[in-house]
Image (cartoon, rainbow, N blue to C red):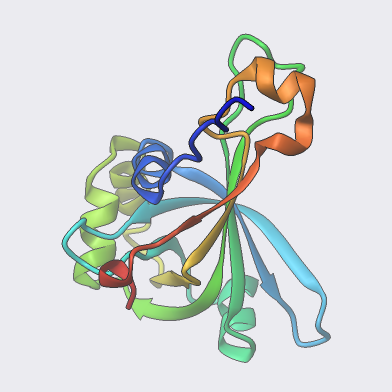
Length: 171
């Protein structure tokens, strides 16, 4: 029997997520219903515990939701540029979110790494910006990222796997 293909590691997943800046953030409202919104995100420094940061404003719904219920999810899609008819691989981070000040060192570092993120920080000069910090559960849900298209075509369920954040990277 042939050996199974290796599952991508968290290090592989983290490197891919660091190259992106857009995800879909889902929070839970007071009535227990999900509220999803597209969001730009940054990633904590490699020497810090792994966390994802979303820049937002103090009066936005997602901030009110996190203050009421800290459970949140960030899904990062990896769309195919040329083969747009193929479902996009994605990574799902589930965990606890909290509101951190605009001056948070790790969040500022994460947003300083990419031009689009720096530009969005500069755009918020007259507002009341804050960051939402998502501290993910150790188990990261992935589908299709790092899995060959031929393998996915043969069996689409073969694309699902879990990557585990190493203990030393957890908060």
